[in-house]
Image 1 (spheres, protein in one colour):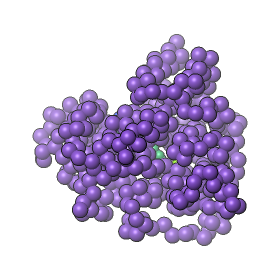
Image 2 (cartoon, protein in one colour; image 1 turned 135 degrees about the horizontal axis):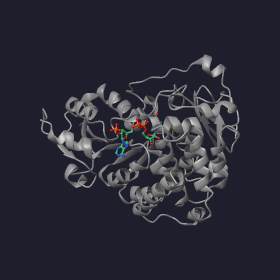
Image 3 (tube, protein in one colour; image 1 turned 90 degrees about the vertical axis):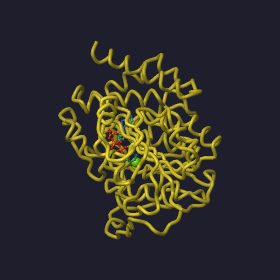
Image 4 (tube, protein in one colour; image 1 turned 30 degrees about the vertical axis):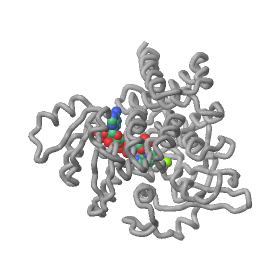
Length: 388
Ligand code: NDP
Ligand code: MG
């Protein structure tokens, strides 16, 4: 029987990697839903190729353009995630949540009940809405699988063990494009420099987060949530070649290093297939790379955002939304050439050090609306702060 699947954010970097895996295994999958924001051209191409009957296009301009088009096939097109009842008549097998930024939170929460399994790449949702996602997963008996390479590798490495048997998990970081770039030149960094990641081909937002190292701050919070552990057990290690993705240090003195090529096909295909055979991408062990493993501590002077890790509340709160939303907005402004690279950290710390906003550390979000309302409030506040 064909597996029924849906991809949120199918026109993005993660989405397209998954689409390529499915292309090579076409007879095994039936795609029920694909979504995008603006990129209706690629979305329609995907829909024709896989005979997909349902599309969601959230951007109003793109949605209206497609609605006016004469389509080659009968396709239901929606502009929001409020009609999932019409799309899914019964539980499907697999959903990939790969919308970027906090915009992925609501769709991720809404789709959980319609799938037996959900693979979540959208780290912003895991960070800001984990309390809610966790409850929904349990209530709907939906299996969760992480997609982020460090988290998938740790998830794979600790299978069969309890978190109590683990002393420490190290998440590796390539260091991004500015690992060896002199700090005194940081003020000259522009968009194209920040988008040029040395090892990974990714979407714009996460590429900038890798350049500032915010991505690693996110990943530590993500790991704390997914593995239900404390920050004390989690560390970042700079590893420029990105061959090792995580290191798991067990209490019995044994340590596992999980390695694979710097290709997101590896974790993504493993979230899709339940067994270890029949893969589209086989990554052979590269002895040369193993001989040149190189680990370093993070330089806090160059990448001050990692200091945020020392200020995080022990249990999840609305403060994590504060970090995610503020960063989301600042990166967006940087990508639109409205602020400079160093302004991202400058304004981020301004917001995070606001005495009133610090109190969010004591508030646990009860529902998605509280997170979305805070996000909206922050967008206005940050606009005022920058354009005062
Ligand atoms: P991309 O920017 O390449 O793609 C984002 C996808 O989300 C696109 O389909 C885009 O549509 C859609 N989208 C963007 N904004 C909205 C919105 N407001 N409403 C609805 N849909 C929207 O991102 P990536 O694929 O790189 O990343 C996706 C997620 O996965 C992120 O959270 C990222 O942190 C995480 N991740 C990514 C990795 C990678 O290697 N790329 C690795 C680990 C995690 P459109 O094309 O129309 O703009
Ligand atoms: Mg990662």
